[in-house]
Image 1 (cartoon, rainbow, N blue to C red):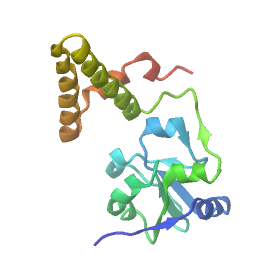
Image 2 (image 1 turned 120 degrees about the vertical axis):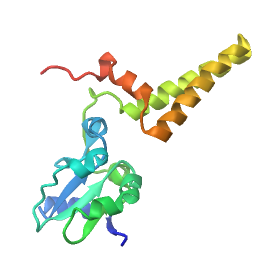
Image 3 (image 1 turned 90 degrees about the vertical axis):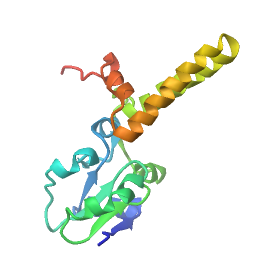
Image 4 (image 1 turned 90 degrees about the horizontal axis):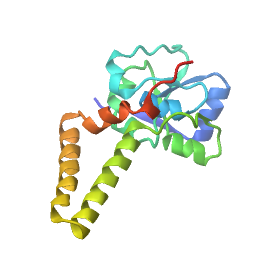
Length: 177
């Protein structure tokens, strides 16, 4: 059986939240949530979804969201099964919410999301490897190949060594209060 998440526009979600009729569940990772989220949203990362305890008033509508709506659409079976009754999704995710001019709670001091840092680092290394390969010595093409192999391994296994290294960087460490 395929579960269905009913789509709601940002305005519909806002109305339900303002009326106290709904709970918004953000399924992005904690580093993404820390950077920006909708006020009052519960953080329940999809990566630990089966272990998470979703505490929601049974009379409230449960509305799921992510950055663009892709994660919620891809995981609708996993999400909807945890809700008694109908489940909903913010159509277009936080991107649509922001585009509609609705407020987001943001923390400019929070580091960029780890996956964005991986994309920036990997892309930069590949570009540097190609440029050095053309202008310095062909052996530098090996840098691009190494990064490509690492990304392939990360996609196949779910383990990203570059992400692990980036998490250790000083800008990604939790600051003491």
